[in-house]
Structures are given as structure tokens and as C-alpha cells.
Image (cartoon, rainbow, N blue to C red; front, side, top):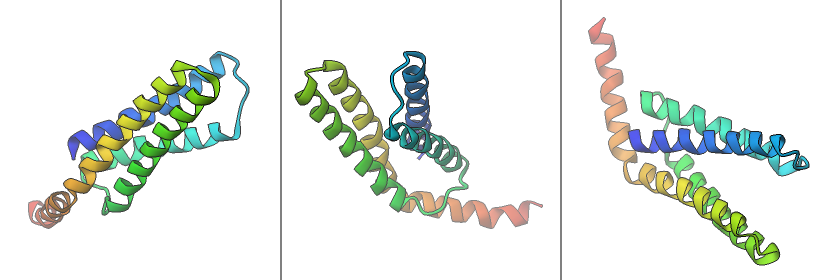
Length: 128
């Protein structure tokens, strides 16, 4: 789960950095850029909470991460087919992998995370 949290933070930071790069290059603002910033912020926040053990049940977020990863692959391929831009394909593969891996990892490690989180919460009152 630590790896998943780190990858979510990395994905969020990459989305935010891409948004900043697009603004620096004076590429026209699109409505999808709003979703890029929102997703980036949520990935960073959720990754930090997951690493600290403060995250709720991560199953829904794992599924959503996989869906966004598959969409990233598809969008990269679609842009490549339409424009022939290899950079679109590279970005699609990069973000697709960056999201598929933690999505799968969070679903695989979900039960162990919930057990660990419950143990941490039980130990907390006794430590005071």
C-alpha cells in the first residue's frame, strides 16, 4: 500500500505538472484541463492519506484508478490515430501505466490494509 500511495502521489503530481506545462506553453485552455487539476489534487491527497493509514476502504478508488488508466491508454491511442503525434501515445502509455499499477495494487492489498488500519486504530487508545 505504501507503493500505491507513492504512485498515486506521483500520478497527481504528474497531472498538476502537465497542467502547468500546458499553461507555460500557452496551449489553449480546454474543459478537460479542469478535470486534470481535480484528479491531480485528489490523487495527491488520497496517496498521502493511504500512506498514513487514514484512508477509508480503498476498493472504489482502486476501480476508479483502473478505469482512468484504461481511459488514458485509449485517449493516447485515439490522439495518435487522429493526429499521428507520438507524444500523445507516450503520454497515454505513461499515465495509463501510472494509474493501472496502483489501481491493481490497491485492490490486491485492500484486505491487508483494512486489517492493518483496524489494528492501528485499536492500539491508539491504549498508547495514551
